[in-house]
Image: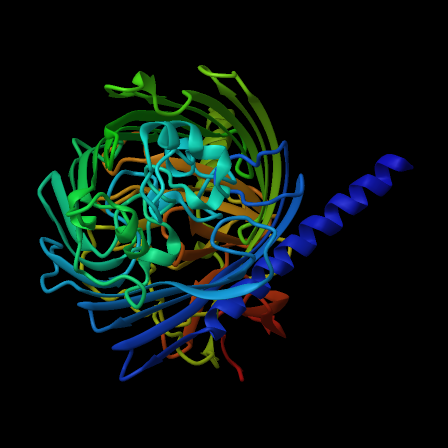
Length: 405
Length: 214
């Protein structure tokens, strides 16, 4: 009897899932408009994410919350528009509790907008202007909730270091040991998430090679507020680029580089006399590789970064991760990611040589199930351990239900 | 000798298309819905994109004779290709038990999948030159929606039918279904996932019926 009831429920769910898919397909058609004989077409789409995090304090990564269990809903709307075959526009706006998960109140933002011109059909050159994700690395194409096998970002994109962009450290001691004296949000990672800074990019493909270079108004480590052109102009631009090589469709290899000043304007008064923001830069070198075949996907990124820090000197760090995803069935997938970030030493005559942040290792495990082609549930567990210093641990458990339309 | 002759007769009989001794014809027109808007391709995070507008796929209908017909001894393998980031054809009617190949004719990866109750599968990512071409056997009646995990805008349909008598309309809705067996049946016009029109028909040999689906 129970089996029959279960079978009936399973059948009802399947039928319901099919109806939901059909509904979203119709909605998609309704949200696509065209004019001028299909030469102007626009589509409104989006995702609704319901996330819940449970962690130990201090909250890991870019999560900014004083409570241990955080509910973080997010509505994302995309507009994609195409004018003829050479002009493309897109935007992303969000209603959530902050760009990164936080216990703040609701806010609405325009996170991305860009106009892209592709003069030739073969893709040899593309120009893009606006506020959009960086061209560096290979994580960007899967950073949104539907594509990302995990709920959070790799460690290098979210681990807050001792670098802070709103004020310069008063001393080496302040730089190395000051982390816990300030609010967490005062610090910066090597790359802040997808880095939706404003600027212009040129990209294209030449046979098996592809290239992309960009000039942005903020460095890779800069916080979301710095990405707006109204907040931060182009007096101190950041230049980044990536050279990619695809020996075949399965492999994708790339080398990235970026350099630019990382201090915000308000830090100017805290700099040593006679120095300005442009004197302190962030340099990043990156190597990435991706492999995909049938149901397996593997990604690797290595980053070497250097920050020029006032009153301290060069602060170097090396970070990498290896990530793999496998689809066990058409609807069920699993993913594993190993992340590590190592920090170099900084020194001065008074304090001697000291590591500027504690080395970290983190393993992320995730499982996901797609109920329909529009709904997905992901569960994640992360264990983070400081491999130097006090050896602190942190456990994160998270769930994310995504509805895509 | 007589036994061998009988075996030959049986063998030829079993592979001979039913249409050879069925001769009724139905023709007419299906009122099709308004033409779709061409899909918009999301290219937000592709740092290298090619120009080009995705083609509009005009609505088509499938007209078929519903009834209890003997299964065909062998079914030809059909193809749904991925070309220029679309499914070609966008709609494929097949009799139940048909094997369908999914060749990738683009220079990029595709990842074809379906969560439809009639067929749940995921072919994963495969190269254009990869052999054998990934296939699926469609052994359950119903509508199968094909999608691509990489290219969100791609959508295709496979309509799995329990009849060997079906035809696709042209873009104006006209159809001609020939070689039909005599008898009383239901003629159906599948228009979209929610709309299937039907009419009872009585077919006689060497007769042509005209039926419209308004």
